[in-house]
Image 1 (tube, rainbow, N blue to C red):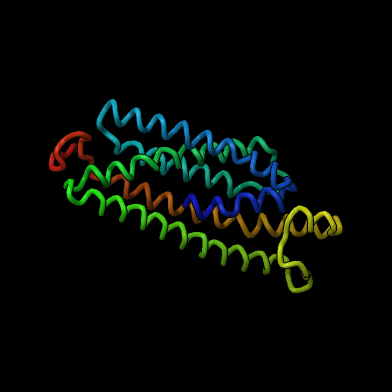
Image 2: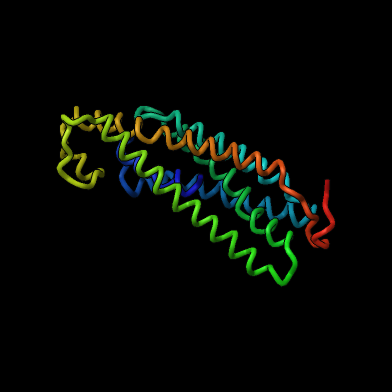
Length: 217
């Protein structure tokens, strides 16, 4: 959900809303703030209570809410809406990162600790790679469909510099087509967040610093 969505956020900012690459990078700072804040709180919560099951529930809900907000943005949306949406997205992501690894490590015997940790990282990377590939194909298909055969983009790369040389009408058409192509990606992220929330509901909670067999109902 995170890697697949965030790959296309700078594209939306630069093509649909006309930000420069530097400005689009700065617009991602709220997400980083959200991740750092939520990760810090999640770590303190787990250390204080020994519990973690509530964190991925909150994280998946916030991630889905942030993705839904991002899906409703268009070329004319004010910057504050994007900042708020990406902040909520970051809070959700930060609530999940430390929990998943901790839960996996806490649920297996010590001799399997390295194997379980590596398996978690591997499947996370596989999920991210698949999401980027699938979402990229979806974006390219919908962008080509929205632009139509009458619009020919001679440059293989679209960015602020190439768009500056385009007529205003074509820039507006490209901005609308980009919004049309990216919006379904975020709705797919919402669907993935719902699936993740369902798994969080059935996640077994073993008290931290307790034997793996001691389970909290």
